[in-house]
Length: 120
Length: 254
Image (cartoon, rainbow over all chains, first blue to last red; front, side, top):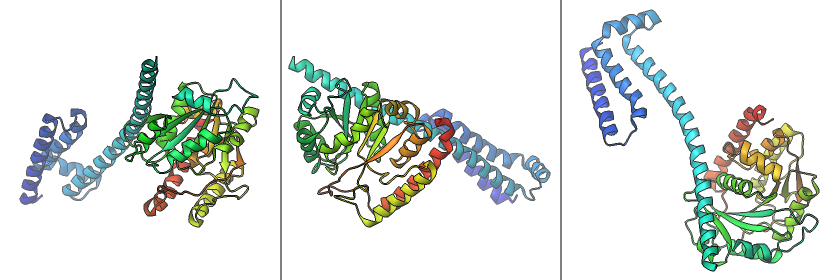
């Protein structure tokens, strides 16, 4: 891997890692959802440090270049992550709908109770 | 207020006086039509029922008008996007308040309260679990735009193909459900509801009996229809996805 790409990857992964740590600190992202991204940042950094190890894995898998390995790895990760997010999103939308229905019904019951109470 | 409305509606379903019926009117930004709808229900409702408006977080004055008219209402704290959210709340409400029949009407004053008895009767007689008011049986009154009719025809044909039953107006919002159907949709198939179209398919696989009865619809005199340029593309796509989803889930429904 050319030195330029290695430096770029190192800068990118470190900023990615720091960025996510800051997001967690500011409570913009929940730790549970940032964990995977922090692992990705560390994974990218490990490519810079342990290039030879990744090269040997790439050769084993029949991938000609270590940089292709990075791309394949990232795409696979993103696919799995999007799949996970889709499941979470479906669960969340069900829960939100349930909350909307029940909170509006509760608000209605309180209003009816108050009106009845005031009338009495 | 709920009790006031109950007394206003006429006592016509005397054959089953113990039956508790609720008429749920969906509303989203219908400030120009909702009062006419409520007045129509107040003067012409052909069944004795409780009336409840479910508002999908309107941004206009409609909720204030509903309140001033003395009608009972539920207001979603946020808009759920489309009518599916309102239907889900309606099923939940009807289920938890132990209603025997839930009738649905849109707040755009296109449905006629005088025809409520037509959609309730098959449920009272026990000949169906779900009744849909179709404007395409007698072909009287407002028949919708040509492009929308074509869409309805295609989806009705598709549904007929899957269920072996003839459908004519699958997008109709004028419907009635008995307790069995209320329970089915509130407990077994609530979160899966994305479009009105898929209700028929879910109903079929859930073992519920549905019938269509001829009703007349008025043309929309005010407000905006959900169907615009974007929705004209979005709706068919959504309908296809929701129908496919229901087909995938059919084993779970049986």
